[in-house]
Length: 380
Image (cartoon, rainbow, N blue to C red; front, top):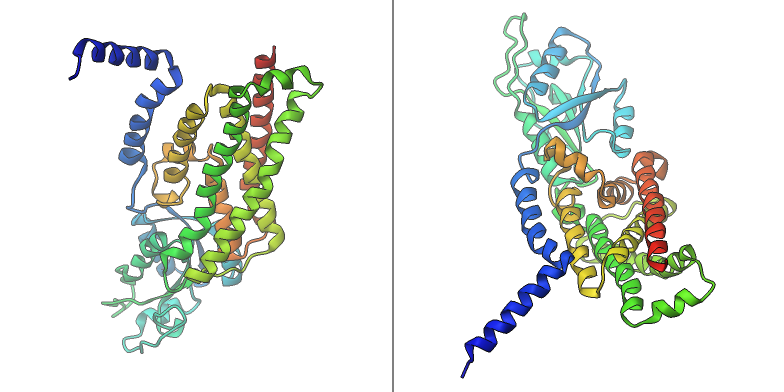
């Protein structure tokens, strides 16, 4: 039979212990708070403000009217102007834009045609010859591609020309890199970022905390090893582990889900190395604060949640509010999700990904310096 006095004493003890454990107590409050804010404000499947480009070979009032009509929908923001479709395709591969509106030189004449045939194209839509304009779309993200594809039904009337209104204007749609709009093509490369974030941070944080829990830290203090040498020695083995995990995901993704692998091996290894280093550095930062492996796991989960929700892995980055996008840029996973999808799906070269690579390098250097300084204070 329960003795309520003894039971209440144990319950009181546990609450007091939780209140003394500041990190665990903070996780109790912060995890539901962060999730509420992320899902309530940052997560949005209504895609708006997709970065897009323009190839206007017509240079007429009617073509400018079409551009303005598309911009007024707020689905796309035109940020780049290109002189040819080839330049536009290169911009899509480099990730500068996600869609390009190509307006042909004979745009007005096409708009005046009353009878035109519907023929199939490699994108599964009308041919360029029977369409008034063309959308080039980065189809690697089906949600984003679907939002831009909806503009193919954009109402349009060419003014100041007799009988120049088309009841159903036609736009050719070319979905690059994922013409079948399969979600697995987009998910598998992004999954590498999620798995590496979880494993690299947790492994590194737990490794140093384990040394402290097992009493090995006192032994390491008495040795001539420097803090920076200890830090490097702890993270270098996990770089190989990260590459193994990446290879497993890509191989199984190609075998099971037919994810295309058109990457440059050097670019893939380089961007992955930078991300693994950034994740391991974040694990070192956590290890300087965590007092136990349980705390290290809790703090890893706290980092993992925004990495999954804000990096563009699950929800389109373009659909997030501006504040959430700024917050996402701080996370290494955001830059790696963009980079790995560009390399694996679009065949981008690392020279096309300078911004994301510089962000990963900066995060690693700053984080490693802070972790080393904090670890020195612990040794003192």
